[in-house]
Amino acid sequence: MLLVIDAGNTNIVFAVHDGREWRGTWRLATSSQRTSDEYGVWLQALLARAGIAPHEVHKAVIGTVVPAALYHLRRLCREWFSVEPLVARASLRWGFDIKTDNPDEVGADRLLNALAAHQQYKGPLVVVDFGTATTFDVVDEDGAYIGGAISPGINLSIEALHQAAARLPRIGIGRPQSVIGRATVPAMQSGTYWGYVGLIEGLLNRIEAEFGKPLKAIATGGLAPLFAEGTNKFLAIDADLTLDGLRLLSTLNPAPVLPRDRARLIDNE
Image (cartoon, rainbow, N blue to C red; front, side, top):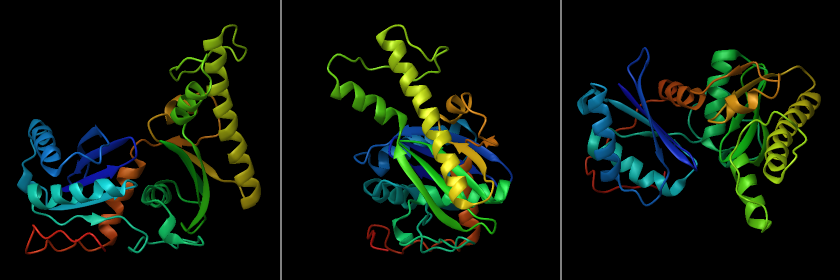
C-alpha cells in the first residue's frame, strides 16, 4: 500500500491507497513542532481502526509547502513504516513540462494539482485551490504547467479585516442570501463571500482571455463546494485532487532507497 502525506499550511492530510482505492483519509492540524513519534502514535491508531497493519505500507510520498514539517514527516516514514518517502519537488519526473521562469519556486501542491487534473479532465484547464492561499494554476493542452495566480485565502482576508478594524467582529464563512446586508455582520458576510466570488470569476475570465482559448475550471480544497455554490464557472469539484497527484507522482518516479543508518537523516536533497 501507498502512504500519501499532503502537508499544507493549515492541515496535513494522511491517506492510504491500496492500488485500487483510498482505504482511509485522515486530517491533522499542521504544526512544525509535532514530532515523528506523535505522528506515528496517532496515525497507527487510525490505521488499526481501518484494518491496515504498518507492514502493509511499502511506499510513501510526501508533498509539502511547509519545509519545517518535512523533517519529522520523513522520520515518520522511516522509523514507523520502514520506507523512504518520495518528496514532491520540481526536479522529479512529472510527465509534463514546467514552463515557468523558475520551476523550483512553484509549490509542490500546485504541480500535483496540475498533474492530477490533466490526468482526470485533460487540458487546457485551470485549477482553483481554496487553501490558506487561493491559487489558480493553468495547464495547457499537452498537460504542461504554465503558471497562474495566487491570492490571499478567504480565512486570511477575514482575519485581516477583524484585526485591522477594531469595531468589526470576527465572522464565520457562509453564503448570505442577500447581497445587501442590513447589519454589520451580514454586510461583512456579503462582502466577504460575494466579493470572493467576484475575485474568482474575474480572475478566471482574465486568465482565459490571456490564454486565448476556453479553459475548463476545476475546484479543489476544503472551501471549494461553498464557493462553487455562488458561481457557474466550475466544471467539477474534486476534493482528492492533490492526493491523486501524489499517488500519480509515485508511479512516475522510482521509490527512494531507505538509508542503512536511519538515524542519520540528511535533508539537503
